[in-house]
Length: 324
Image (cartoon, rainbow, N blue to C red; front, side):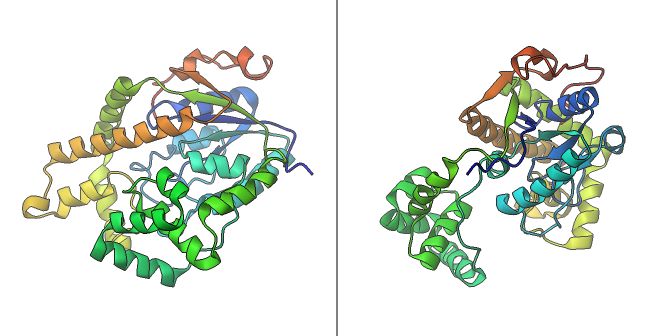
């Protein structure tokens, strides 16, 4: 039995941060009479609109956006929970006779929504506390070595510095006695039944040099628009964040750091840009491995005839194409 949720294909716009996804999504949504669903792990969390590159009030007024700020500041925003909420939102949009544009840079969210995820057990807080304590005393590399002993294939896939995935693999094995490799193998039969959604996938990637330039321009504009004030207010209200977005710690070090932990404004901007560029590189690697994406250097170059038999037309851009 097919897992297809709807015969209406989702228009999916993906790519690294600062590639122009939001700008293209807005223009396409206006052209198609569509609504936009966020597919971005930063944008789905509440607060910090500048630092998480949320749509501006003007953009939100132009086109309905969904799942922006849908999760609390420190609420788990797992791919599985995202897919559950996105399913409901997409069904409601289709019921209104509208098309859906899925826009964002979190590849795991896209995969969870469109193909499904391995149905592993829920997290166990006690196990996680114990593993985190072990990582603090012995180092993450020791946990990776432990994983390699029980699941060589998963250890080969997971970076020795990727604590989150190492922790999850060890947790699942302790809870079930089965490795993540076993779970993936068993899940293949379900995925063979077909995708959860049909998609038309557009990828934007102007290249690493252009991305670095855009990231620098965007970060400087955030500073001028009140980035430090935004982070200071958020920190005063919520305290330390469990899931801080890129750049949050650097702003805190600029505002409150002392001695060697303090960053002056220039060093803060430089470090935010470096870390954001590294994140963009990881996004590029992920999405380049995903099938079915038509790649373009910029949104204005998309040829609709290659995407949906001519049914998608993209109006000329009247704005800077790299807002997001």
